[in-house]
Length: 78
Image (cartoon, rainbow, N blue to C red; front, side, top):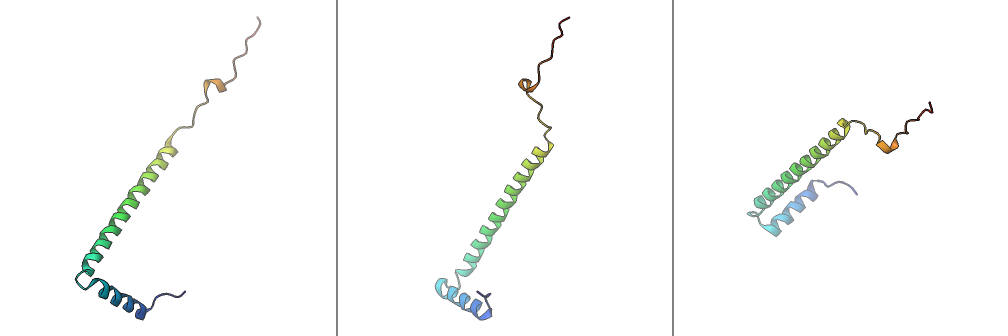
């Protein structure tokens, strides 16, 4: 499959104008722009949340062993 050339793009634009009319195209473009803006903002928020969680995990100190994991002290028979 090749990329779209100018004749194909022009044909697509003409079909869109015929389907929606010239007055509706600015409204459709505005809606698409706002939707894309919202998608990018949400993506940035999610990415920053994951980065914050990653930083928190990197800053946590190493877990100390549980009391049950330690060997009991040996008693001497003096």
